[in-house]
Length: 41
Image (cartoon, rainbow, N blue to C red; front, side, top):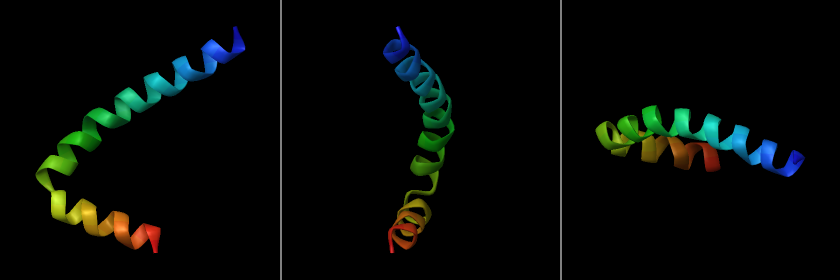
């Protein structure tokens, strides 16, 4: 039961974050790409 609770919460959180992030990625694909690269460095 605990295993199902963990992914369920993660999915809910990821879903909410994925929506706004997808919009930003599509609108600022280059800016986001550069930011991701800088964070990886």
